[in-house]
Length: 422
Figure 1: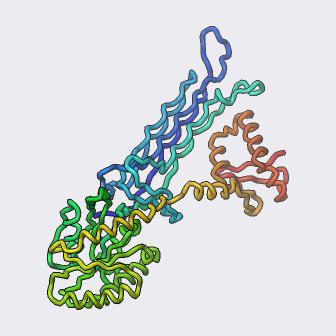
Figure 2: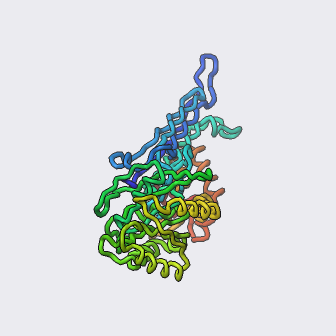
Figure 3: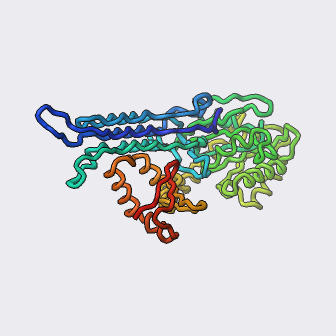
């Protein structure tokens, strides 16, 4: 099962605006009619029902949306680029690799999230026509689409998680209580992937049950299969801790119980606080009763409920899961990760420009001003005037003056240098 992948997404670039003037037989000097460029396509993640792994991303890791087309004369706008839809399974957590922040938590079938926005199309010269600027010989270039490197992490959407050492009977319990058909065998790590099934009780209650692959000591550090699969119980509301009371593998029931709980806490402290029920399994085997009594004393001391069961004979399973259903009715489903406000605050804190001094030159940096620079035709007087007004409106000229700039000093923006004039 693939449940952790890195991908890159690039939205489409906006089309360039057109510089064009009407040329008609009976019109001596036609006005500007350059159309706008089309918007670049977005990259959109969409939750696909029935998709349960991220294996489709194993070989395809780059996703690029279509660019917008350039504008044309006659006020013809460029066509917008098509959005690119990328299918992901339910329970996909999307993380920005650069910042490490979660930007989306996708859990509902059909849910969509625009993960990279297409660039805006550039305005044609018709949009820059004014009563005092009747022949604009410049237009805007389209904006670049957003680019991100992402980590997709799949976390199963199960209400109840079965945990415990390998070969304690978790898969058998799942197969009896649901229609799932997990691989069952008498050896360690029979289950190599998490298995899901729906428990349907006679009282009309149903919930999703997950058999998490066997955990061992050191699982939180990656020992055994633990690190790969511990993430799948982060969303569960109730944990059923299955313990082999027959001690058929020569381990001690009390030690097993303590080790698994320690691993859950070391991986994520919240897991240790989730409601937990102990399922003392294999009670049909001689000698199990004595171990059950020992485990029961420890459970009562720690405040855990314990049920005596035998998955092989169906003993106690009804009582166990009736109690699980009651607990689930008392525990609200956790809200999905809130990210929009966090992203907005980051954007608001980002300055529009920054000015540095490098010997005799003043260097202006910032995405907005660098984007505007691409649209300026320094051979055209009106285009230069437009640029000067931009510097005034954004407070860049005032900032330069506060830093002591003098007329004739050098200003550098990207690869362009020019003399400062007021």
